[in-house]
Amino acid sequence: DKPEALYTVLRTLRDEFGNLQTFMCGGVAARLDEPEALYTALRTLRDDFKIGNLQTFMCNGVAARLDEPEALYTVLRTLRDEFKIKNLQTFMCNGVAARLDAPDALYTALRTLRDEFKIKNLQTFMCDGVAARLDKPEALYTTLRTLRDEFEVKNPASYVCNSIASKFDFPDLLFTTLRRVYDGLGRKAASVVVSGNDAFASRLYKPGFVEAVQRIGETLRDNRVEEVGAMRLIFDKNNSKLMDAIEALSAKLATMRTGGAIVAYLKSLKYTPGDKG
Image: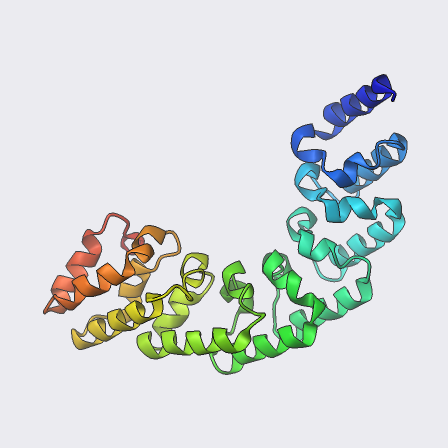
């Protein structure tokens, strides 16, 4: 109805706060009728909470809390001061922002993760996949305890990638599949392969994938190849193309009769991050 007023707001947002294209989510757009309140909130977020990239921070989940800015600031201060979240813009994914309406429940969950599970860096651990499970915290804790006690996961922050966390809704299936991987590769090699590896974890339920992994483990043992180093070569998290061809690789390795031939072949592959040391 008043395009000039809108253009004035947009110019201020552009000139003072950055890229309008990524910034103008529905939650921000809904607040253009009161631009001064919006500017004040954005300046507070930028100056007091050191949020350098408001475009990535101001997702709909955060923008929706600008109706009560002091409540939002209180939560952010607690996250920063008690939980040592230094980079709020990476921590405040939609999964966390969705829980700002019940901050005490969020704090309780974060304290449990920090104190019981020894997760020192909540900032890197609280991906959307984990944060989405805070609706049922006891189920999340039970899953993490099983990973810790049965699979000897000492550092959940580095082990639980998004693709592992996305499988927490059906933990029995996850654990059954992980047991097959661990049985096939051995505990140490399996832990190295699974830990923080979205590319590997995202393929766990792909038909034939785990069976191929088990066959590779058997071939390596039969030929006395050191499994951890070999698995690093095959299942590096950046080596997704090779993982897509895992059944063919399994069959190829099974034709080789010496450990030396297997190691030489693995090192001949185009992507060999293990060579970096």
